[in-house]
Image (cartoon, rainbow, N blue to C red):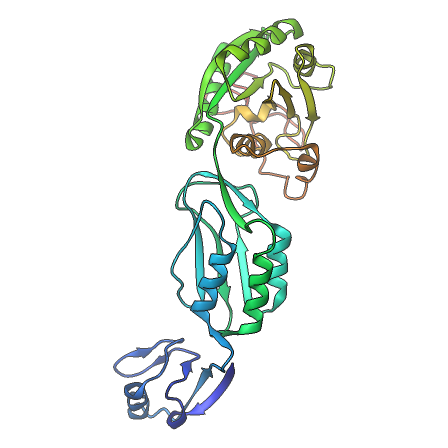
Length: 351
């Protein structure tokens, strides 16, 4: 592409590089000049202007943006019509955004004229949410550059896709201690239902048992009759060790602990397990709060049917320091938890 100042007499057919305000109208940047434009420029006393001229192998910005956007869009993603060298991508249904980060990095590294941006990988999205955008920087891109980005986009699976939520039936077991009010458990279930609502999942079992390994093990075994897809356990006290009540109960009935703890705060004390082909989450205390925490990150992946491994969890540390939940029982900077308007802490308890 040629770019630079030319006289008005030479400008017909070229693309205006910068918007021009004339006495009667504005010629916007990106506009291809025609004879009437040239006449108006002359009448306005403009002798020269900066333009772009495409060469034989160049691909216009809108065409290039749309072509690349279509190439990277996978299942659950639609491409909007391009404008000013930009083509946006949107989710077609609720789900979890899956991104091929290395491939997108490779596309962005091909040439400075082509860029692509996305939401973070594994972000929960709703239908209609923008999940990515392709932007061509100049008014055209060399055909060879576009061809190379398309080659990269064609390698392997789709670079950008939305995996729809698949798990619909959630069983919940809450354990009790004398220090934990029943109203706190009620509020916890209310918050969980609010979390599940955008995913289409519902609570199909709400069991409450004593905070002992035997009582919890019996409850876990009984989940089979509820035909649940996922089990969430809210312990009355946080899991401090693999031999604690929640992990011990899970293993007692043939379950497996896949990982305990995660480098996300709030959310450090999450337990991930499995039993009878069913994912099991031992929820951290912060999951009682509606604010985003590590529990959300794992819950949404599992509801979308995405596997979560120990390696997946240990890679969450960069970006895993989330906004503090000031009412949590033990703030990360120490001190006492802040109380809500009713004088309760993050567990719904009075201090």
